[in-house]
Image (cartoon, rainbow, N blue to C red; front, side):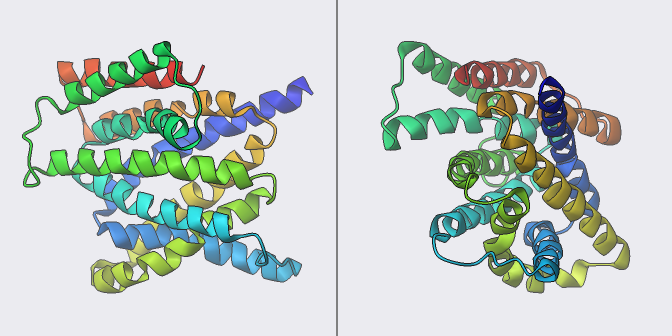
Length: 280
């Protein structure tokens, strides 16, 4: 049993490392957000759709309304997610992304009536102060690419908190491949117009890299994660997921020579500290 749990913990950590590569892929591809997004959701849907067809496995039926709503939320999240990575440095973007546990606590309090003790209120203030600190040296305005990217990632973080809660609620009803399929299904329809409008920028090389990205992150990364999530406590999985931050920052520094200002380091530390402690 101990070996099994260690194996599942390793799967979550591996998934987090894979997710951390997203920013590097997005920066390298330099394609419109909607085009990258269609690859990201479309490849897993096609591969898993073929798999289900070969197995004769029926996945559509009654009781999938909530999981389809979660899929729509995830599609909108991905749009802002890719806009964030296309405009902001990877390190800045991924730190802002990990404000999502803060949003989760706030949403749970207002919509699920979960208690919000004084300790958590103080941690929320710490996280908000961290966000202000990270944004402090960025010119405010939609004309500034970094500001736009970080703002988009903040929106993505809020939507991510919503989708995580929705998919976690449904995970006992579906196996890991089914969850990954439904997570991406609505996104195919959502991003198709974006893809048609930007497909003239595709080359064979970029198509190959975007397909690899979709297989690695959208299929393998999330497939491994949802499989492990059945046997790993949500709090443990959430903590291990922070490896994505380390992975993403490492890719940014090593591949794109990114550097951090003092306020970004301090603000990022405040956000991550608050987010980790809010899970306890």
